Length: 177
Image 1 (spheres, rainbow, N blue to C red):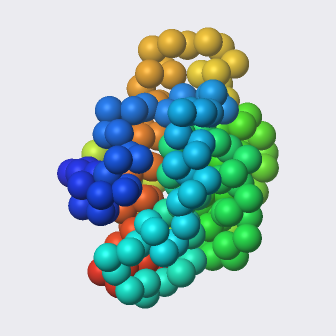
Image 2 (image 1 turned 90 degrees about the vertical axis):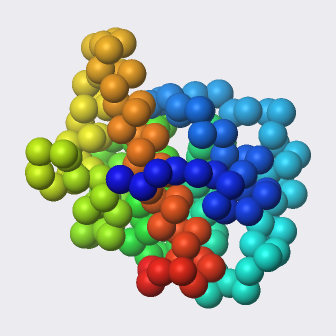
């Protein structure tokens, strides 16, 4: 698992990615204090210190930041137009969070075997299973199991961090998408 340091992604992303923030499993409440900042965020501004190697991965990074702050509609508007496995991954996470679990699974089917899966694999060696996470989130939310919700929020945080890191590094040419 990566050691997540938001400062690796430039000043602007560092300000927008509070490491201690755990997203809710559900839609949450958008952080309206950041709306103007996020509305002004574009690829030129977000990646001003880099020449973009992959515009789609840069867009995926923006979709992830909107999602981090519970702006599901805005994240969806970006990810649904990125016809790549990674765009589908962000799209699936958004639908999982909004509670449209079958739609989330549809988008996770489109992801295939994503490069971040190896990083997210369980410590017991079992493979990452996005469908199982959808089922676990649905069950925990339905049952109101606070202990399970807390544990799944940690898993979701690691997933978000791994996927954001993958997108950012691909966007700036530090890895293949």
